Image (tube, rainbow, N blue to C red; front, side, top):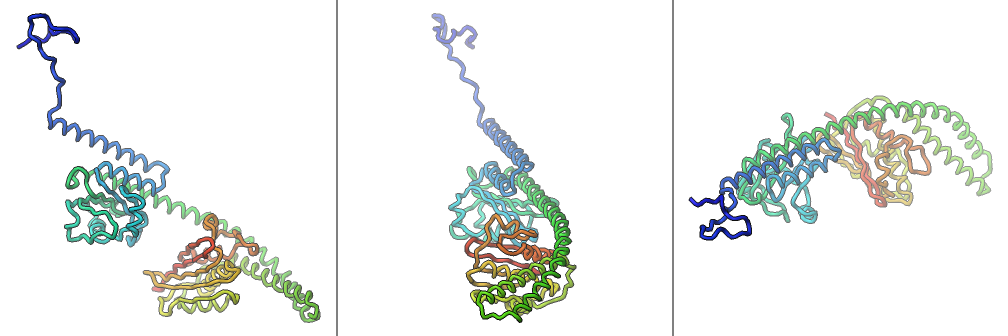
Length: 436
């Protein structure tokens, strides 16, 4: 065996007459060892990504940002071309959040509507267990793809579950570098789904806590404002009655031949009526009592509200509330006040006239009423404060009409929401409990 210990230093010739011995090649890993090393590196990378996703849950990211990070990380960890996560509503009937990774915004826009939970995705939710498919198009549960949706074959889906409750689904498609997803991919996806479930549950708990706190603060504020409104309303009512009597006396005794006299008397009478309405709002706000619930016909309720509220000639009314809707459990007087206030608010939003539409429909255990105007609309910055007491952007009024609406709606365990576009109008939507 040649002696390599006497080999020449780099750059020198070996001693004459001695056999030249080549320098040894660096040792290289054999193929199985190289595969194992690569696998370990992938696992380490995946674990680092899982740790980063876990740390993100405790950060101040919004839920949408956090879910987006989870699908982005997951797509890289399991080497998928596409990934998505859908969060189901608390009743499981629809999606409240949906994030995707691997598609451009243009591709998402072409697909359009969110998944509806049919086919493979529906099975993933119903069975609440992981699902791996080599070719989802060959599965009998597949319902195909919507127009413009990328074609997909390999599929890995895991339910997003926490303490036995299904919050949504996390899924990956089009495995890169292999024809299908592996058991290791499934394990990694399940870890990510657990983190997503924790994030969703935390976000819902935080939202519920914030809503409870807001209700407590609102109740305290409303109580204080109500006491003040009662005092002010009663103090103003007596002198206003005297002024109103004086206007009546002047109209009876003063000749109206002079147009200036007639005009000023009319202005005075109009201002007295307007002030009386403000006092009524103050007193109504201060004395909201627990609702006395009785089953009522919705169509009749709307007709009475329209009859009670005088409408200008330049406002066209479209009453599309059909007969035969389920009855609602409401306090007749209070709900009349709610509808009257919403109609009055819509009319005030259309000083130049427009269309007032009222629509009704049955949705599950609720009856939904929509009051829509074609008025000036509500700027986005004003919408969060719309139902606050004393908040108003109008030149006249004290800002109690909509706050009274919210107060009555809350007492009925109902719901009111608003949608608006500046310059195009607004829609107030009432969800009332149907009579059992």
